[in-house]
Length: 427
Ligand code: SF4
Image (cartoon, rainbow, N blue to C red; front, side, top):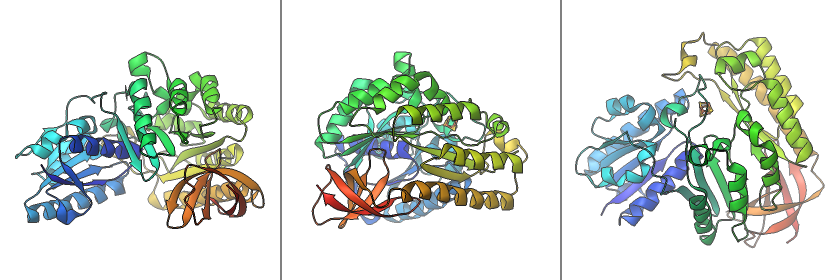
């Protein structure tokens, strides 16, 4: 049996896959170790979403190769880079085993084999759910794959086909996480809106949310990212699911740009007007809902005017959180072939958008200073805790006792664009 060290990079899907890998390896008698010096097998679960991530991954893989070679150990490269760019991995570390995300449940074959193992074809085993628990916060990757073919996206080359885990398996995973102490469960996915299309022939996210929320225990459900075009057909059922008392009134809806011209170049399947109507409907029918979004700055073809439209839509739709990414060109994507926006201009636009986002988000948070809000405590670092309001706004406070899993009342004393700070007035 081997002592296995795992490093994980990237998004919620990779964190879910690492949880799956740990479950599978432990069930076969292997030990997961925290320190490199203790390991015989080194697994790196890679991300390749941006070009800087790609370089960082290659550097880290090469460093781990040296460490593995010095101790006579074995290196296994898993995750999105393994699937989307196996040629880069093989060039950097020719002796490493390579395992795609879809083969995460079969990674033991690479760990246990004395020779180099390539697991790059084959489908995900729906019987083994990708889930993990970080301290008291749980995550279940309910699906991977999307309906889209966005021209900038490399992720689709790693996780193209829609694969959802059966509803009963997700509920069982939630029960397991709650029994281990989870006070929050994130239902994560590449586009959670398409959950169920592959196995039930219809979008089943609202039913899944309610089913998980009905698991007994003191925890809250957080719905992961979903695209505007996949929400539109299920918006009524989704709003109904969000009204459940154990579900955060929070959605993460990546609009990516405020310009229809850029959305077309990105091959996104919706218009700015459709986003506008959707978000206004959500805000009017789910009181206090918070909406986060993603914006890509400097996609090829983005003019000054297009960028101004993005600034305007961020203000108009009053997003509660905005994840901004500067566009970087990715291999084997259509956007890489388009005329690129020069990097100086991309950086300038990034700074401008950051300023607008900080102002918009700060204004919302500042309005809460002086009020007493109810929040659910989920995280602890020393004597510092993070609680979440019903719409998932983070509220940081100090406490001498462990309040995780409890609703508390907190007086909001200060705000940043990112979170609130306060003190408990009643538990
Ligand atoms: S919806 Fe678009 S950006 Fe998202 S994973 Fe699919 S192809 Fe990539």
